Image 1: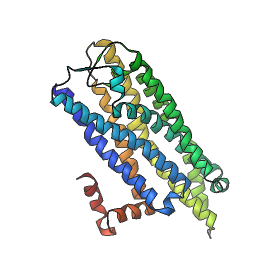
Image 2: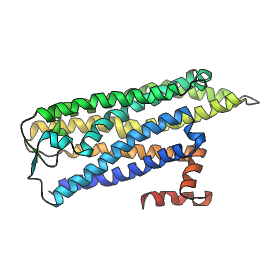
Image 3: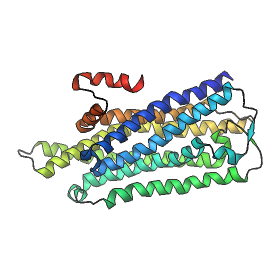
Image 4: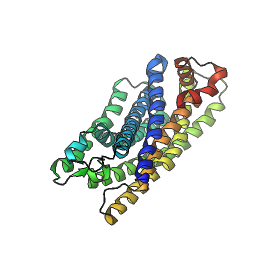
Length: 312
């Protein structure tokens, strides 16, 4: 009982902090015209929105389970369809795919910006629309398969509606697939980092800088910022996601009771990853920092207290 309560409580702080951070980043990009017209930041905002949906689902799921456990309502039974109608259930299924697929899109965007910078600057608004809508649509399409098992199942589930029992095969496959997509986005980023560093060294040797050079420098700095984020993603998203689902499915094979493995708490690290990503963008992009500061009426001397304002 206490373990289940602790697991439910653990969802809340991670979900809340990640929701706040992603909401601030999206608001900052939308608020500042210089930010929202940049193609790479449109894609970053779309990535942040997927993270926001996952974080909000985590927050809602944690609060829902905590209420059920505290009120001692676990004995009530739901059908699989009723469980899927809960907001956090279908939000989790969509965001699982969307967060990973958007990481791939961000990587491909950085490949284009480094490999063909001149052509990249010439892209019109169709490019970010296709880059964002494709993974969103694919995530929506794949998440629809999560409804098949809950609708057709005859046995009842605890009102806790634990994901791994709600659609076990789909849940496992989706976690492994998204873990693979995340790993692929990181592997593809390695040559991008090498090429970006070479270009940065070449640009430092230039005596004068053209407007194109200035824009390339901004793009390269963004590329390196995302590189730092990718390192965090490997340890806080890709690996925990794979280990977490392996441990959870192993418990299912050994136990008949409906309980979640403590391994599922590894999934909280994905929320920590999105929080770190926010602070990387805040610290390494002056325009994002200025916009966020203006949103909270912060001046340069009070930047330290931004952390306190966000989480207290």
